Length: 206
Image 1 (cartoon, rainbow, N blue to C red):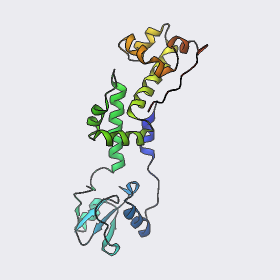
Image 2 (image 1 turned 45 degrees about the horizontal axis):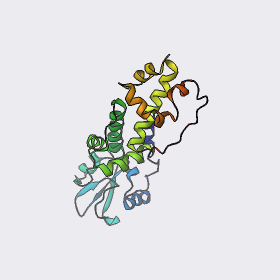
Image 3 (image 1 turned 45 degrees about the vertical axis):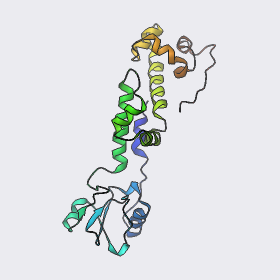
């Protein structure tokens, strides 16, 4: 399962070369424009990333730059609110969500929401919302889907269900069988046999 490959693909490719396009990005606080250009404000002496949440300046007081270094050479200092010298917000979030996904994938028992939010350095609510926006799944659904993929891959490889359970990373039969219907929609033995005679159950993973 490779949901992480989709996390960084949601940034739209837009041409920000014109003054009009750049100004519109500032007005919209467009996160997709972060890292594409920077703007300075003559009246404050600072430069920002396009998505900065600071009060919207007047266009006549704005200049545009291709890099932080160029803005600083022109005499402007980095905004303390949007921190333009850091990673673009979308990339920063992708790194944090990727770390949470790795924690889910590497754990015997999936971390709870509080633990995952702590790994990402976010509040529970904010993490849950950002995780779902990035992966298309809630953290719980991601964990179930990951384990489902692992056991589906392992079951055909082994002679017994027990061997497949341990091959998929479960440390006990009991923990697996407690969740097997949720992951496979049928009994493990039926899945190994190609699902013959089984009626898969459809569950809402959210």
